[in-house]
Length: 625
Image (cartoon, rainbow, N blue to C red):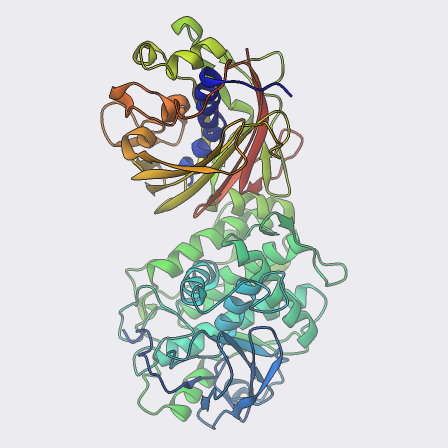
């Protein structure tokens, strides 16, 4: 493989930004009573066991490696509370609830299959560890495809932040108003595992927990039967799906397969979203939630839930008549609505028998949402369309066919079109064909301190089909290596840069905030170990922002990224010293890149498919001549 000296590496490094642009461009497009528990040093943990309140159930403690810890264990009381001392057990720990009596179901007089529920004790200072369908889904989201907490690299140092992230993901997809309180208020950053439950949120916690389980039961019915086996499988699969913080049918880059015969992972996702909409409609209407028993028959549970609440906590507010949906619940509604309309091939809620949208401004008693199940049962389902609609609605969707690169040899704009982009196993591949080469001489100018100011960097153009509302931070790691493969061999140069890009969107206009800097590791052609560098906010910021300010705003349309600015040596562009830190004689040659990102959800529809696919990595090759 050919190697280069000083000038090339400057330019080749410039091409890191070219590679990065394919990802940064996409990534930047990218997209009362609930307080946390107080700390204690005693190693004593208490909590509530809730689907409906579950009494006389066994609580078993497992070490991080999945082995049973015999030093701890207890049973829940008639009020669904439990308390245990973890003794010599070493956190992080998994606690599992099995057996017991669900007071909502017993009050209704129905038999409802259940699956064992799990929760997490992250440290000896954690004093509350509620066990519920939410904690169960959070647990499976944390372990993903791993067999235990330790196998998933969950440790005492990262368990708290991991739970917080997973809790946010779970609630945004399946929260059912768990952060809504019976006094009309809501709780931000609600954590179902460590939340202290009291008079204002105990009732809505039970209702939301029962709603999550009811959604899974209805999916299980669609999958062939309301059985403990089907229910357990669906919880685990949805948790694995959410392990990468995106409901996309994948666990990281691995596509998930259902273990329910004749019922695919795509069907689980589509029907989970659909039934979530119907369940939300029920709990925020005067009629209340219906619960499905083992024979598949649905029965009203509202009075049983109220009775169970007062039966185990007399101080808790039992009425839901004045509860308002939180912003998290209405966002869940919007996503579920998009998927459901596509699943049943209809265009309006009225065709589903639902009278109106869910809003945060109106209490349940003033909004008698209605639902006619007979209308849904007569509709035909389109699983692919439902998943496609959900992916498009919840991600930064890129029109892959319109991705182009504008190069500027001799300061003359030249449009280069990549080979047909493809998505497989959560990887978007975008490569320039050998006939469409980037100008090596232009890249050389960018890395030359005497001429860089007069050079025009290449620009990558992305066409956004949709931009979701929200805000967050996109984490971006870009890697570039000499040659046409992704592995660095002796004598090859390699570089990796990582930085964060804050973003916000109202669903129409996307705003990107200048990164604060980037950390870099790199290898020169002769290096046997990596070196480190730091790039300033000016050097990194010019990659994505306009010359007029530190923010770039754009309507959902075409975004342009001056990708080579990261290594422009002009003082007006940050005067990067990284370009001159690596030596090479020529900027011509082949390059391979890969870019991973986090914190946002991205998708695109390949040319040979009508279904959108999500991706978390962009990779490809290109040539400079």
